[in-house]
Amino acid sequence: MRVGTSHCEQQEAQAPRRSCRNPAEPPRGSHQEKPQEGTILAVGPGEILEDGTRKKMDVKEGDRVLYSKYAGTEFKVDGDDLLIIASKDILAIVEG
Picture 1 (cartoon, helix red, strand yellow):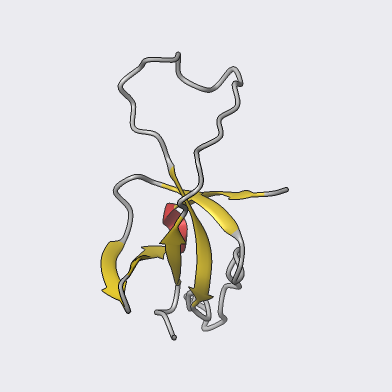
Picture 2: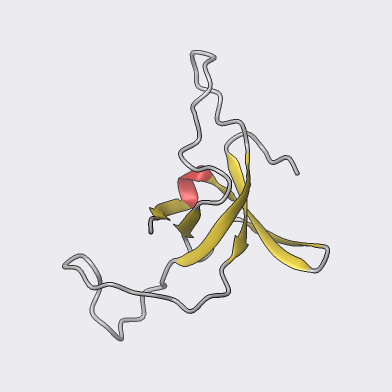
């Protein structure tokens, strides 16, 4: 599957969510939307910059990422729920 220039295709994670506390995290019970987690299935070639060079994507196939709750466009392929999102909507790459 091919995706657009600075976009990634990913599948939403089905595993239970993990959380960690840090000073920047809002207090428990706040109504702020939490980020979503998924696995990158395909990656575009990267954005073309003003000087004509291509910006390398920060993610690769197989990376687990956190992304904004309302990011991207949802669609189905062979019964799987998938999401295409712009690289700017990826908040973090989950390690470990």
